Image (cartoon, rainbow, N blue to C red):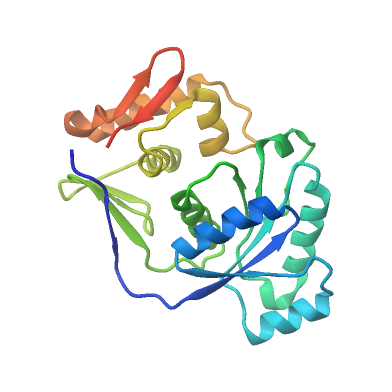
Amino acid sequence: MSEPRRTRRRSEPVKDAWVYPFDNALADVLADDLRRLGYTPVRRPLDATPELERAAASSDPPAVVLIAAGPAEPLRANSLASDLRALGELHENPILIATEVAALATENPFTLADDVLVAPWSADELAMRIFRAAHRLGLAGDGDVVRLGGLEIDFTTYQVAIDGTPVDFTYMEYELLHFFVTHPNHVFSREALLSRVWGYDFYGETRTVDVHVRRVRAKLGIEHAGRIRTVRSVGYRFER
């Protein structure tokens, strides 16, 4: 089978991404992935005053803000996200919090960010989270197209086409398909898919995953449905 091919529709300038390192290990992973995506990670001081951050954003605004927060830091991360959002210079910039799954056990975790990234993540998932946050803020422009044989997914328009023919997917069907495509050859349990695709604050049954997988397979058709493999007693795996 052919490998996914990613193509840029237009060249993009290098973009700064601010990283607040409450957790240095997570911040290091973020920095590496951001570089792969064409960003320049800039670590910001945790003790910086609002005035300092406002001045920095005015002279060289970031494309995205990321807060690397460990399991013990949801309150501090939420507080920082709130303070940054209050700055007029950053009111249109996506703010994401990167954390570990243990942090999600706290009450109302990370509710003030535009999105939450849970370790372990891939660079593609980070890119999609940034895009989705920007999309919600009305900032998304042209993006990437992923092609896998006759299957084409446009990250910018949330559209899917098979052999050039558009196929209608609901929002969550698209999210599930995108997650599979960007995490090939890994087995994910139904519980993990609920957390990673539907979100940490979704309290649904694992049957939800099975229903959406069945719908996605049906829309992919005979040629591509078999890429989503059922792993008995575990979950699902997407094969390239």
